Structures are given as C-alpha cells and as structure tokens.
Image 1 (cartoon, helix red, strand yellow):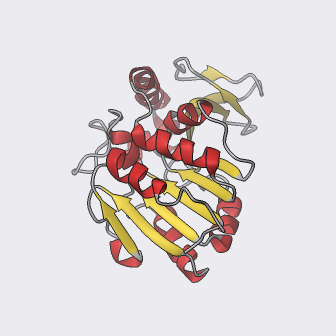
Image 2 (cartoon, helix red, strand yellow):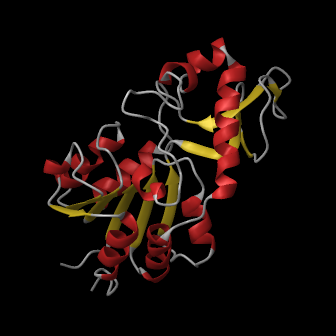
Image 3 (cartoon, rainbow, N blue to C red):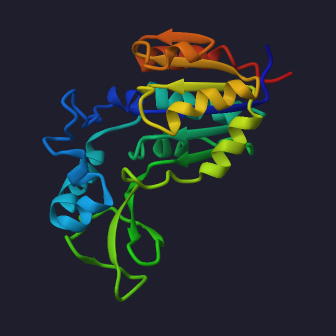
Length: 241
C-alpha cells in the first residue's frame, strides 16, 4: 500500500536506548518525587526551588546522551520522503532535533514537541519562550516581563499540550500513523490512533512490548527501537506512488 501523508508519534521508549531515564517508576514517582510536586503548576507555585532543581538535573543529563539508531533512522527517512511527514514527540529531550540537524528533511517535514522542551524556558506572565541551556534559579527573572519568572518550557499535568490543532489536522489527513515507544496511557497522545483510524489510516505500533492500546492498531512490531524502527522505515523507503 502506498502512503502520502504520515504521522509518527514517539514516546520515552525511543530515547531509553540512548540512556535517557523515563523518570516515572512503577510506583508513580519521578526520581523519588510525586508527580503533583514536580509536574504541575500548583507544584511550581508551592515550591519553585524543588521544581527548578528537578528540571535543572534533567537538562544537564542531556549532555551525556546521543541520538540512537532509531532517531537517526527517522531523520534519514525524513530526508528522502517526498510526501508529508509530521513527527510528534512526547519527549522533552533534544535527540530528535540533533538527529535531524545531521540531515536535510524534505519540504513536507515538521517536528512538534507536544510536551515542551528541556532546552527552552517560558515566561510565567507573557508565555514567551526562549532557548535555555543553563540552570534556572527558583525565581529566575524573565527577560520578557518585570513581573515574570522563567519556568521550564514543559507541559505539566493540567496544561494543554502544544500545537494540538496542527496535530489533529495532520492525523485527520494521514494515511499512515506510526506510534513508537509509547505506553498508550497518557492522553491526548494515547487517543491519536483512534483519530487516525477514523480517517482511514493504516496504524502501526512499534514498541518493546504491546502497549495498553495495542488492540487499537492494525499492526504491531515489537523489539528494541534501534532494531525495529530502522527495519520498518526501510520498508517505506520507496515512497508514495
């Protein structure tokens, strides 16, 4: 079957083989913290020092990881795909960005960080976003407003993921949806497969093991992302007809 419009969703599983911790353990804690304490606006208001320290440590860890074969396979595929390709990642690391910086994506390619990016900061008053690679102080003055602070550019629980209208339009128009390394438990991303199915798209899950939503996909490909993703994308290399 030929495809023209593809949406790829990636989650923590694609970065795990690069050494990026998933942070959320089986007990629901992130590095020993309750999610409510480090991943909500209320947690930031109650203890900005704790929240800034949590993300400062995550930001520093990015210097020690590199894109793996799965990230590079998507970047290489984007460089030769003549149709439209939207890559939506739930990950806040920059591994996709680094992999794509080594290639030249086609004109129909776009990359969306729907949950934000560790290497950016946002003003608490204006919402304006800037690149940021250093630590943030508990009450870090914002360059955009005298009353504002800089906070991690991360979508916390209770906040709306980024670029949802663009993502929804792409899902409604795609003929292939591929979910890579996701748990199928976090919404709205967990519902993307249903939107794609409603549009008549072929749906494929690539994961280490079946996710909670595996039954919603037409196909499942299971194993390490560094092996399964390159192999799957090579099968699409011929492009649309």
